[in-house]
Length: 142
Image 1: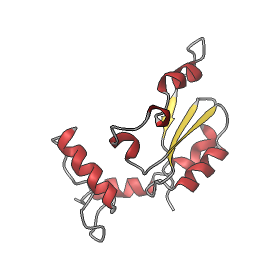
Image 2 (image 1 turned 90 degrees about the horizontal axis):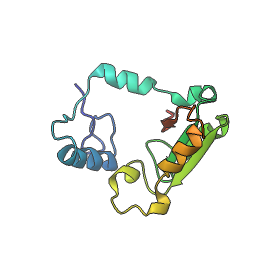
Image 3 (image 1 turned 180 degrees about the vertical axis):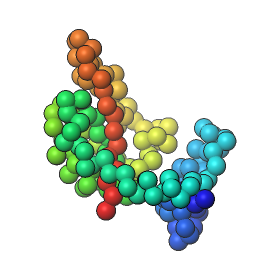
Image 4 (image 1 turned 45 degrees about the vertical axis):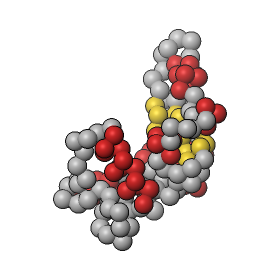
């Protein structure tokens, strides 16, 4: 088993960043008390092979909503924007300030910075409700 996070960024873990440690350790206490800070080696290997940016051109005609944090170092901002440029319509981009976990951990996120899920649903489904929305966070690897 491999730790998902560790308070020491130099220690072996899947996500060796301080913000990852803070989010997972706090989320574990508050939202998922039974969460265990470990994954299998196979899970790590599969995580490292995950490359959704390779398929972004194939998402269309399913509507794409990309939520990108400007200060994200786990999902680099520039790589996410590059992937968005390759995506075909219909697509929408929501840019948020902060880092990877800020959109889900900040309780004081101003409404203007929150993705408008209601308007997204209307846009994605249209009047007929015929489209199925796809919400994705692009996580390219280097």
